[in-house]
Image (cartoon, rainbow, N blue to C red; front, side, top):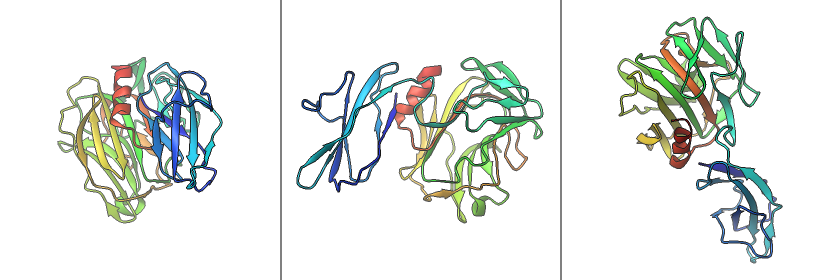
Length: 290
């Protein structure tokens, strides 16, 4: 699985920063080989080799131009896919009370509009959408006002075509949107901002066969990628830069947030990250719930 290690750069004018990791406390006088090296000013490192359930100890060392080094305090992280590191929004179908769907970070609780049921999901319970424009879940009006990379991840079971997860303002390109749907015999993952609308990419694999599938989409300077069941399915080098996402539109699950393209589907374990998960990170999410 993947752990995102984050720290604050203390502006030592470094030429590089070395990340160290161990399964036991690190001895500053006897450090192991660096796990990875990042450039000056960087404040995160993606550890793709973590094992679920293992506890790791990290330190970061800044190297100045004269080779003077500055070693950080030690910090400890336990690799746990049950509550993914650095997820900014995480819904399951397990925590529903009345019209509220509890979001696991406690920041973006969802509101059920109309009729959305609980059914047996990919793991525990899922949210079941009837394919009606008046039945959906909305959340996170303030989630992502500007973003330059992200990951969308969910499990879905459907034979229908419609919108799964959207944040769409009334005018696509001027207001900016994140778009994840399958309509008119195509599945689209598209983004837009500042008058620029991406071409987007489609799935190669058929996923509307009535079986559970794990779907992930990533956007970053490396382009756009779609994954099905833990494997890269399609990709594009297209990148339109930092997205300025509409603050007037809610995220919608189960329909397009403009009130169209509803889907009859069961959806579970929806996760949103404010960075691009690696292929190993996506595979880890799939393997955790398959």
